[in-house]
Image 1 (spheres, rainbow, N blue to C red):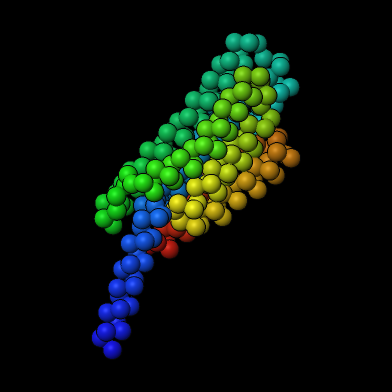
Image 2: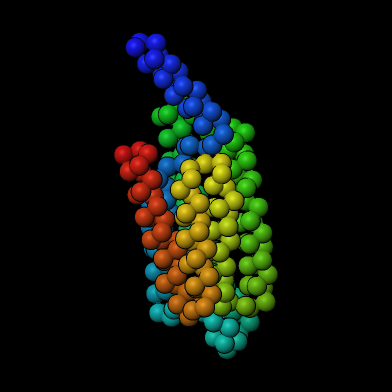
Length: 211
């Protein structure tokens, strides 16, 4: 009986070592919650302060602005989005490092490098495409494209971390595609995709793996 229990423990240990060597397990569910809250706060501030209570800055609205007015508005929106992104990244890095230390994981390993590469290729490609659209004053599909490329990045990276990332990615892609059909409600889709989906995912992951 003791031999059977010992063998079972050995198999669990081997499985744990193999899993840690093939998947990045230091992602914290709380980082999703903080990213979601930051996205919602950023969207609300943009809605009230920058867009003056408008759901979306469409191409027709931009055409009525002067060149300096259009540039200033573009800068404000990019700054708001950049601030949200930096906060989300900082929170994710801090919480992941804290979790890695608590669990005895190596935060910078071959698998984390593969994860980062798989995530960044579609994300950076999408970001460059969005910058091209911004330069051409094409605003309608900016938010749906952000959601779409972000979802593709998550799906690309999911094989190197928790499998639940795949479903978050598919959800982001779905919200982005629906948002492309209803661009006048861009802020609502931003809040849904980057806000509520992140919070729901983060709470689920925290309860499942860290709670």
